[in-house]
Length: 301
Image (tube, rainbow, N blue to C red; front, top):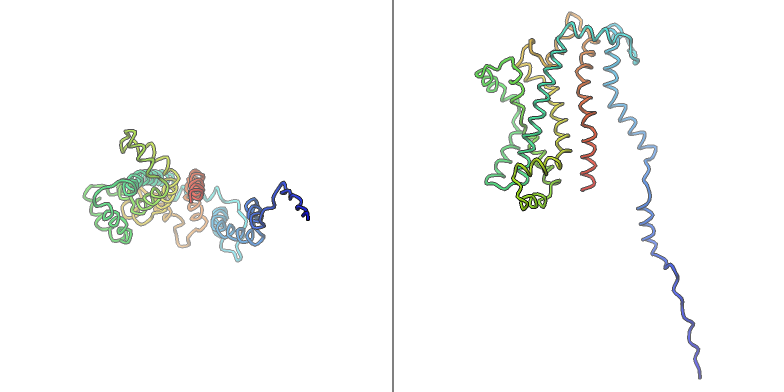
């Protein structure tokens, strides 16, 4: 009795893939699109964030009588140049802007350099007492700065620095926040293998810092520089203690505007607008570095 063999089964040219793999690949190649609700929330957030600056422009371009109307006009007026002239007459705003640039720029450069050096030491160098020194540095952030005003003023008076710009610059050259910020950034962004390879090649610590650490830390340095510049530019408490009206910064000079029985809000807003524009320019200059640093961290994560 003869049995017939089953015909050979030819495998398909393209075997069917499991459905979960096809779904996974389709999800991986799909581009996520934001919905209408997302755009609506973003639009509201932009309007809420930009409205104070827009109102500053509107108030700076109108007269004090226009601002007293109810409801006030939400469109810019024709008095912007006239209010700028009043600002220049009532306060030495040109000298104040120059002093603020000197103070804020010096503090920013000093803080970024010193905090990057200290952050690199705490993050990648091994030395005795590193943990205790870092704990003390971070602990100083809990002390209110107002507690140090009297001894600091006594020190600058002993050095005869009252009403001089170095009295405002030197106390702000290093910040505990900046040291901790750069330490955390370098711990995550700087591999130990790079430093070890540089050591094998005979590079010194200074060469490692300038050739390896600084290029890696540039996005973090940009963020720290922007935050430091804004804090130094907007600082009012210590400059008004250490400086007089003859050597003012912008924030000290703004308090001289709009004087009289009835404060001229339009002139005050015009001076505020002049004091805000340099911060916007600095943000525009460092914004690309900040976004690049955020994207670099997202890719590494």
